[in-house]
Image (cartoon, rainbow, N blue to C red; front, side, top):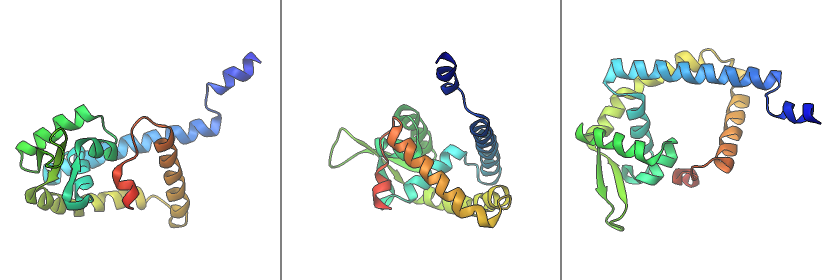
Length: 168
């Protein structure tokens, strides 16, 4: 019985292989994307994540809590980051007109232009590093697996489901 309980604490060989492969890809891809964005447009990957999420929101605006849930950040980290982005003119941070206790983050015209200028280089890098290394016939299976993992994270994780999820 003790051996069975111990086995539950560890990943089996295939699980460990998949998990370590995912971690290598995720960490290296984040590094490469951050490097490319910094070099080409002066944005960090964090800046790009915020701008991208806002660009998909109605009127380019989200409450801080919703934006944090959308990109998977803690609220305090997001608050500090969007204040820095606000000083650069990429977003504005204001109290919501409908509820003065809530802060909204809004994509500015400059932020939208910056995102549009950064997107082609970012997309080219994603194609080159992610999709060019992936057999085309495996794309539906990879997409399905990642969507299932994401849904499981939403169901069992600690952040609320992003508001944008209900609009897709």
